[in-house]
Length: 456
Image (cartoon, rainbow, N blue to C red; front, top):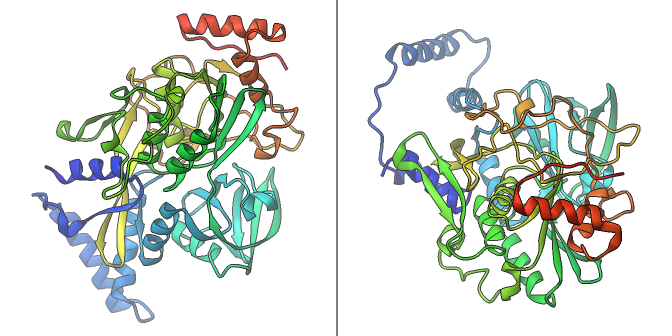
């Protein structure tokens, strides 16, 4: 098996986790670009001999590795010791910080999501905010690892984060916390309608979802809310989708560089079950795979959240409601180079069961419901807006909107302004005369996909 194939299989087991060590993989027979290698060594020699101060060899080559990975795409990067440790902590669901996910480069750092209930979310940080400084130090020129290191610290200490919105800079003082992500939240949206919100796909999310489903008495409908969910572990996404689909159902296909590295992932515990651990979905009540289901998404629903949405939509298992998703349809794997470093890089694109590409395109809902915009709302940016994003390999099924909708705050979820949730309730209660129009839309969707705009 090639190293690429191993990376993809590792990614399917636990994406974005240090799964494979370089010493454990077959070494590829590569013909090195001699001229480029010599140029790198020449630059190294010139710096060592002529730089005005002492130069550390490790720092130089770490920088070279960082630059090489950063040249690939928006989600590939070099991981130093601290970054590798942070990856492990985040995948376990416990870490110290303020609870944000960021993407960007040395010129701009943008917030992709602020974890629901985190210090960052309580302080008012929202998806789309641009971070300009940390504790007074400008982030321009810093690597993502440098910024993350400055964000982290002892629980209870304060970090000053400068954010830019609409050309205005505001400094927020945020208290770091020892975070354990409670990623699954359950409420009743209406009598007999369960509303399950998943804020991100962490290591404990699938088990927490299964526990929540087992506690419910068979509802007449279920709303799976993946809005503002940045994704996370691919294996967790597989488990979440598997909770609502029959065994053997196709979830997605992963396509890497080499044909032998391609894979089709189905509802099967081998794609999500951790070695030595029990099947987290064992004992689920039978109703979870037949209950009427809606999925709520928006432009900040990304990665594994899109994987789940695409699978449930293509298999006609759920009605998808909201706005077009973020468009991160790629899988990353982390490979350790030694005990103190590793590389995270993109190993595959994934496609929905019907072969639709998500990368730089996103998932288009069956019923489009645009959130109400506040006067000071920023516009949401997607994968296709990121520098060095991977372009789509397929043309879109329908022309993508040129405009961007406003950022949607989690604080509006569940309120009277939550039009997407209200639409989901109406879709799941077709006997209600007030929802006759939406019920008709749902009947049409069951025959053929549709896109409609809900009335305000």
